[in-house]
Length: 360
Image (cartoon, rainbow, N blue to C red):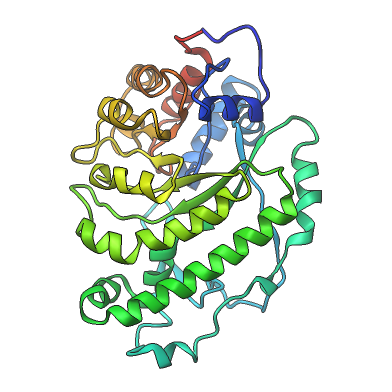
């Protein structure tokens, strides 16, 4: 059971990330959430069974919230982002995902071609609004705040195309390096300005790069170390200058890259897709738990959508026992909770996290 002393969200997360005991395990939806069809189901469940709504419930239980500067840049086309990537909704029946429809650097053949691309700048954002936004978020209770998102490899291939980018790593490395450097330079400037404006009120910076699939890494470690790792080393160094911890997301069977990710400066490994090959919570905690913290882990592939509420409860409690021992764990789903996930299962995860704490 949780301890009697109740901590603020910020205190709870800070203690957990310092590998210390907390009143309960911190809870978050980092790089996650409840997709619209499932959201509707859990909304109905909460109104019927608990006389509340999902927004109010999540407001009361989530320990990490995101804060961001205001976009003031050029007008964007529908589906367009600041990099010139355009996405369109593709239906999966009950809902839709935004899939890339235009890769703005797809036809680039050399570095000279990059000069013509309209790269984003920090002038696109008003960072001066951050203190007021932080104050508004902290008005009712003290939260752990997080800024996001820096994903050099993903941003690069969103502009270039996934297959083209991987081919560039071998056939056109000069172009690949230049794209990655330009993307990383922007992320560093963006995070620096945001953290300067936040003035110590932000504790986490979210970074990402999916480098693994269901069965293993998407590339060799040598290729990752040449093209991707140096970008995160530079980025993480900047973040750490502000005393902020790096929470890094990658889906998939990432076990083979964990040691290198720690060396690159990440503090928290996020997603924890334990349905992927070779991903085991006990091994992660045993091998890396003294140097690394963890967030996520409750399966959105199997247990949440296809298990029973009891199955979800047991998995949640197991992850808390393993990953939460001596602190170092923030509980959440392994990714977005998908359509068809029973509302009772979603609530079983939250209920177990709120009530189960075997270390106090």
